[in-house]
Amino acid sequence: MKRVVVIGGGAAGLMAAVTATENGNNVIIVEKRERPARKLLITGKGRCNVTNNCGNDTLIANTTKNGRFLYSAFANWSSADTMSFFEQLGVPLKTERGNRVFPVSDKSVDIVDALVNKAKLTGVKFIHSAAEDIITDDMGVSAVKLQNGETLSADAVILATGGMSYKNTGSTGDGYVLAQKLGHTVTELTPSLVPLNVHEGFCVSLMGLSLKNVMLSVYEEGKTKAVYEEMGEMLFTHFGISGPMVLSASAHMRKMDKVQYVVKINLKPALSEEQLDKRLQRDFSENANKNFANALDKLLPQKLIPVIVKLSGVAPDKKVNQITKLDRQNIIKTMRELTLHVTSFRDIDEAIITSGGISVKEINPTTMESKIVNNLFFAGEIIDVDAYTGGFNLQIAFSTGHLAGGSI
Image 1 (tube, rainbow, N blue to C red):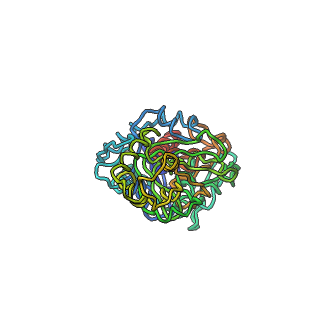
Image 2 (image 1 turned 180 degrees about the vertical axis):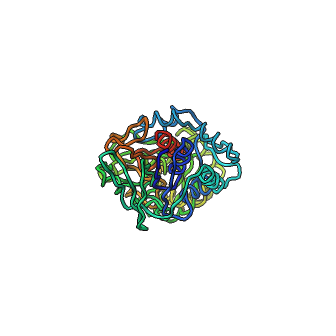
Image 3 (image 1 turned 60 degrees about the horizontal axis):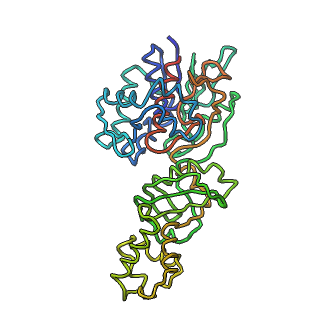
């Protein structure tokens, strides 16, 4: 029996601890917060998008950074394994749009309680403190020094402290410092799956407006090929834009410090330019004596009409029966290419995940063990891997945690 210290009591750390304990080891979780897995509680807007009901190839395809590194982890513990694990713990699950998996209760606390109770039942012990240092000798890790003054002897250590987003949940970047002290490389840390600040001031007037079934395309300024494109939902905020599509788009904006990104929104992607023109003419014929600004009610949300009218360049008080073909072309172009200039990501504390982390070149992908320090393992967001929204990042946490815990 080995003594294993898991630093971090989130999704990855709890899964690692359960697996290591079931393999016959004596396991202690060191967690700063009195309640473990606080970040799990707020995922999926409090519903906990626990995984994505898909195959391993799809998991890798939806991992936007270093996906192939996770091949062994996903092969060892798939999304089907995660679903079976929680259902056997008495948490029934359901699959929704986009193969997103949630507890039937829509309560993230059910997932958290199941995971924490499983850890306790298997014999995992919890210590509420923070790790100050991982002590090593010629054989590898030997102990963990805690802030409370205690030193825990250890035959193996699993570092699962998460990233830097949502600091109030305990993810404050401590694990990066611990790893760097031991010689590990931490790649550049940036927000990912994060809302975007934009230059256009009209977003303030659109604050709270949610758009569905629109097409969002992201370009590097001056380029014609989109770096990201998707149809779905988005939200206007006082600072810019957010929502599922926007969060996913942010994962592709890797050069924020070097290039300007432009977002174009097609408000009517189901209609071709010709079809939209016919629709516009039909609406105008029904409102022939109205002002232009009062003739778009059937086509656009009320909040959006003044913005589209202004951007189109057509006078708001121009009578509909006086609108020319050129005017219509300008209106259609505005609706099909509502353009926003991204100025920056929102703060990392608003990001769902942190992009960057411990270099995958320094981790054995078949065990999650460090290539630099013997018996030091990594799991979860601290590793330089990240994925889209939809349950993929939690699956990474569960898969890497299970592999790390099972490799000791």
